[in-house]
Image: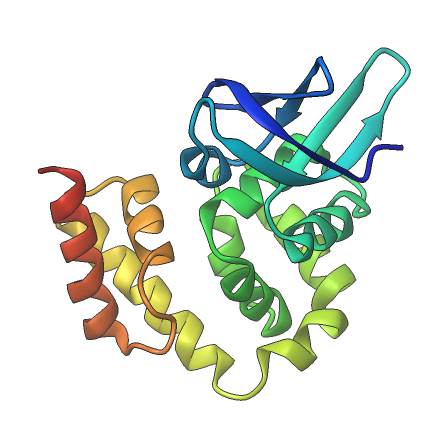
Length: 192
């Protein structure tokens, strides 16, 4: 099993990177957020999950060990494969996802492309106890604030993906209006 890989980025696409180490290029599937943070020709290190199937051996890479652990919790849920788990990790920070799961916020999870109500309920049922401790008090209002900010940005004409990406870059401690203001600044920079 491969636990981590460190090497030079030889190729970067929307869904994976090729990391060369000791003369071997490893294809590592990663979230768009992770891929956007690495540069061709630069040195990078990934914590790796090796997914073995009958017809394939796939590598999934994460810059932080906490992301790898969260990914592995998700793929242990029946009906969620590695690509689905990567999609889930790509739409929000781990802290936001932990709060949503810990507080049982199914509506937040169903807004993720490809996650239906039954799958969201299954995620909450299987991971709620693990996440509830981390969500702490005030999780409901924080999650509602993020949902409200997401809806406000969508009503201003931004796509759900653009809005989510911008909200991932703003402080979680901000109130709804603060999140909207900061997200608009991020979106303004992206469109410049």
